[in-house]
Amino acid sequence: MNKNIQIAVVGSGYVGLVAAVCFAEMGHDVICVDNDERKVTALQGGDTLIHENYLPELLERYRNSKVRFMTDLAEATRECQAIFIAVGTPQSETGDADLSYVEAVACEIARSLTSYKVIVEKSTVPVYTNEWISRAMERNGVARHLFDVVSNPEFLREGTAVADFLHPDRIVVGADSDRAAAVLNAIYAPLTSGEYYKRSDAIPGACNVSEPPPLLLTSTKSAEIIKHASNAFLALKISFINAVSNLCEATSANVEQVARGMGLDSRIGPKFLRPGIGYGGSCFPKDVAAFRSVAEQLGIDFSLLTEVEKINAQQKRRFLSKVRSALWTLRGKRIGVLGLAFKGETDDIRESPAIELVQMLLAEGCLIAAFDPAAIKRTEQILPAGPSLKYVGDSYAAADDADALLILTDWSEFGALDLKRLNQALRYPIVVDGRNLYDPQIMAEHGFTYLSIGRPTANPVRELASVASMHS
Ligand code: UGA
Image (cartoon, rainbow, N blue to C red):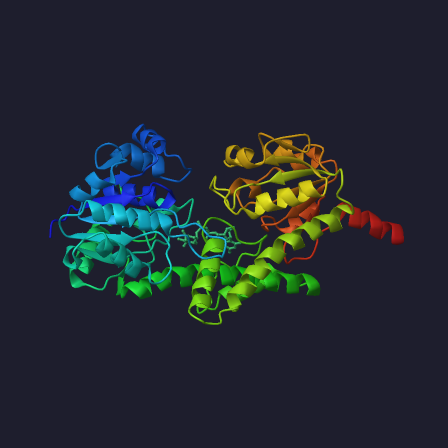
């Protein structure tokens, strides 16, 4: 088979755009299709549209050459051997995934299909979607031997999406025909053979020539379930450690020590055991709800997932109570907020627990000065600045004259602040850290009252010393 494959990627969101430039980086020729003309023009002009490591470099390297952007899906279908569907699957009111965009793309592909194509589900979709796509193709008059539908879920994280794509833990290909499996094997060969990692200009990451990523071949339905089950399991891990953190708070234990003790067990592993203010983003909340909904429709009791969601919602309310416990009353209090994005190193604010908390604080009558290194522009669109809310240019401006500073997003720069300067900026040296970015002992030594998640509150060392001398 020809090593260089013609690939169409439909959708230029996080998954589609990253997949498109990474396939080009792997040597393939790519057409990235989006029906939003403005987005296509912006991408052709070199605007990445999203904040993502390595994306500007790769886009610059390949745009308008190995990656062409266009709105014409019919042309892309005719030219390409494999068509990856990476359009949105938003959450509907009932919790399940809205597949109308996927269906629309399938129908449009069907109308221009004249020779054999592999249609690949890259979007996160519920089990049985491959069958629906096949049905849609056939209803639109495509003979069954002219296409196969494959599931090739993506496990990339925002912020590290490019490196995750090129250095995956595993590549999952759900294919029910050998012909389709062979096309996907060829597409990923530069990674699975280790060839890509020999290049001196390869994007760095965990894989290398001697340890290339494995490609797991499964049935289509298994691959669809692998994606939902993986995200639901990671969300469960987070809710679990958040519940444990509450137990630690009730007993004055330290959740960081507990998580470390658990994570050293190789069966559990240390990742995704960071307690916080609950998970957010465009994937976990939506995918847990969709997986729960799939189970319900199949008559399977998976109420464990309902508990995962419940703990996640509670975690935000508990954080608000923590702020209240530090400040007594909230109305009229000046609060500095660090972080608006749903996690660090991204400008994405979808389902951000930080934004939900800002909204809760505003509803309580607080006056907020918020800073985020990348997400202010997006936040302003849904929460415009006003008398109770202002956006500021750095962390110290957020802390300026505030009654307390809250850390809501785990940006690395928030964990490396000049503590002396921060203390001087605050009206009261109170920090409530929803991401456990600091060592309580160090915060106490710098004169802060420091509340974090699942760890005892730290009080200023000097204050304690003077209290002790008063009693002696
Ligand atoms: C997640 C998965 O990690 C990816 O594997 C998957 O491909 C992606 O969803 C998707 O389905 O597209 P992402 O949403 O980018 O990726 O973000 P994560 O890094 O997984 O974080 C999700 C949320 O969990 C964030 O709010 C983060 O702050 C929170 N989190 C994560 C914790 O609270 N604790 C942790 O230990 C880890």
